[in-house]
Length: 296
Image 1 (cartoon, rainbow, N blue to C red):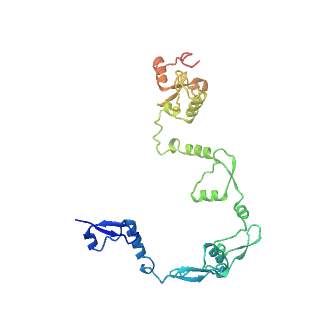
Image 2 (tube, one colour):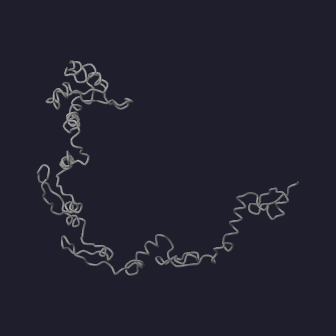
Image 3 (cartoon, rainbow, N blue to C red):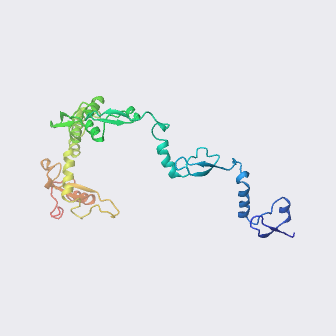
């Protein structure tokens, strides 16, 4: 089928298209950009569904310069943003503003008794102070002196803190977390503990799990720099494994009860070295490790 030569109605360029396209009323434009441009021309001005008769001439309320605006912009009163900002200061300020509520009112500061002005909205929301300084001074209240129930020392508390404790029915008064924790331990020890079963826990386990043993173990680790005194193993970044350390008693825990919490009777060992020491001397042996085992 031979193609027909056509001339673009927008750019005037010649192009070819098949007769069936021309028959249905197409084939007027050489490319999509030209077709889009033609469509835009058809929908602009009076061809647009939003056409309202074109632009109208208006006078700027601020500088009196004439400018043009579409009929749809019924609120257009200024020729530019600069004139709009300047014109609204005078035309929309004070009693000309739609949100005008009568202007500021005079109030008296509750701290310094100085008169100050505030808007009606602030006065309704409870404006009481002329400055931040006066507000801060109003929030400073005298503290209440109380006595710690654990150590007996005197300490200060804010009235709001005391009221909060009374509302929550807290009976104890403590100067810090340590005294509070000690009091809680005392309340939940022995028969006061809900898990109490008549004192069936062995004395040996009770001593090993005590706070005194935990403090002794921490002191031994700190003295030896958390390093095994046999093989020198310790946790290091990038080592790729975790080294578990134990606090070993040079003289047996059970055989020498008076040396259980002696710092010189402790030695930091990793778990494998600790097991080797006990297997060499026996689990309940009272023999001391050699000087090499003590890291001497």
